[in-house]
Image (cartoon, rainbow, N blue to C red):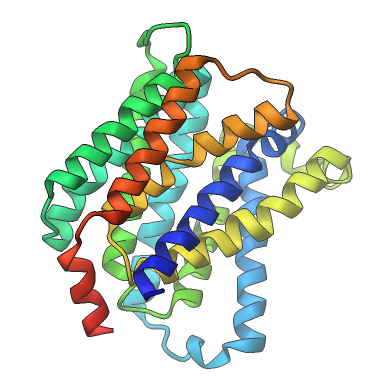
Length: 305
């Protein structure tokens, strides 16, 4: 199996981890406000990656430069804005709208890749992205229609931010060592989330976070979020985007709600209707089309590696 296939499979595992742990995080943020939760989550993830780098990859820190710090800050800012706009949008719109509009990043990423990396938008990319959006709609709006409201503009900004994070990771990942870049990115997300929590929620949530963390739901969610779904997930993304295209990453990440739906079906007592099941199949088909389609740009990357 070549590097690009391994990269795509690894990113699929990341989407699976995010989707399968959605219920766990959802329970935790009912106790600890989302911004405070993200502050602890991403700060902890950055510390974990910093320790791994210090113990096993110490030489990589010597490659750190001012440019790497600036670019990591930019990636962290996009990631923070994505989570922030999504959280604020949920105050004014439905989870269905949020899931669907966030998933529109799968359409935005190819255009950003074209602008930033000069990656051509092939007919396979168009078809897989469109199929993924159709699948997201069927999965998200089972038995109902899309109804827009004021919070949807915030969620659209969230989709743009996530798309920018994926696209710019495709720009910066080949330039720097993956671990330091991912560590700095998550550290900035953590710091920005803590600052936003203090500004929006006040000092109380963070001041009482010590006692709240000891609650089983919150403690378990943080353990899962700090390690697998933050530290290792963004380390994997940063490392893998050296060998695959941002458009493929976006389509692969569109499978996250599929895994979330399956987890809800198996563990959350939820039901999956015919339309939702068809939506899952559309998204999986989109991923397979993106994966199996010819990609001369990806082959070029492999020859350069």
